[in-house]
Length: 331
Ligand code: TYM
Image 1 (tube, rainbow, N blue to C red):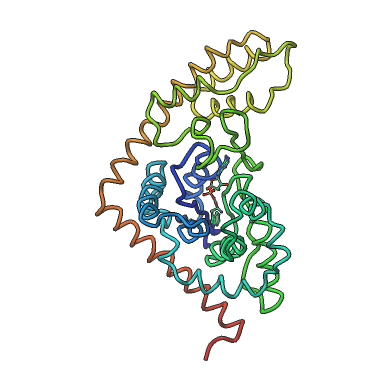
Image 2 (cartoon, protein in one colour; image 1 turned 180 degrees about the horizontal axis):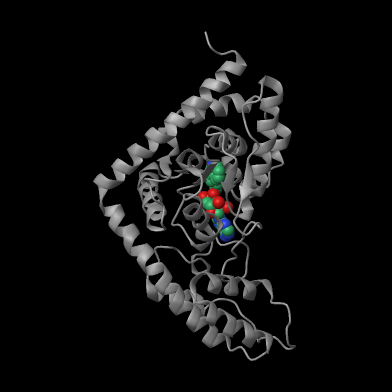
């Protein structure tokens, strides 16, 4: 029986961080065992914000290296760069005819970008969710492992797929956002403000490339308070966030101990953060070191990128063949 198809991608707009790990990479590594997986670096998407393209090239290599360092096995999953798969651009063109200006203007990520950078409201930014849908639908993917911030984009991908199927003929399954623990994840910044992100407050973001000392410093500065005043109180979101991180990197015993201390109102945040900082540094160190090694091995990187592109194009061209057939574009 053929396996169900999974796709996901990451924009190379900065260093990867724990939010990316939790929302996306951790699931990729598990999913590659059971599904036919396609993971990619979304470099076309990065152009919507006009970065320096020399730096972008470097970031693409780093994101590929970080994916592998986190456990992605390129003999199991296809790992590729978006711009190496021109079939995506053709599907993007067809889907653009099914996307309406009004709905694109209402997208939360578009409104955020317009607010933060009113000088650069380009058409690529407006149609970002259409390109993202093409990324997913080009492999006829069913599951898309992403963090909570991508939920609306996934809803739009389902709408576009449904419209396409309705107008031209059944080609696409309707893709779903995926997380192993059913709820999509949102990791907050360590300052308790908004989500951890590649470009916002760097002191509130733990990057997979951070050195041990930097990790310690950031965690010791994380927002806490004077502690719970009644037993078994609900944790404020910024404290819950630190516990979520502890669950990822510490042993169950350590986690349970601090959780019990919290519930019994005896938690000392200084000790809690010290433990979290040590465990986090131990967790990130091998990823950081492996990613650095891979990044220096240009030959290996280009081999991986070429093999990924070949696998992705094989799947993409099959889909495009079906798409052209139902649109009557075969002459
Ligand atoms: P990007 O590059 O912003 O983020 C990559 C992945 O990391 C997740 N993520 C988070 N999860 C939890 N907490 C956070 N603080 C956090 N920050 C980021 C994101 O949800 C994402 O899964 N539009 C996408 C890239 C993309 C894509 C696609 C994804 C392009 N085409 C097709 C899936 C399918 C983006 O900007 O992700």
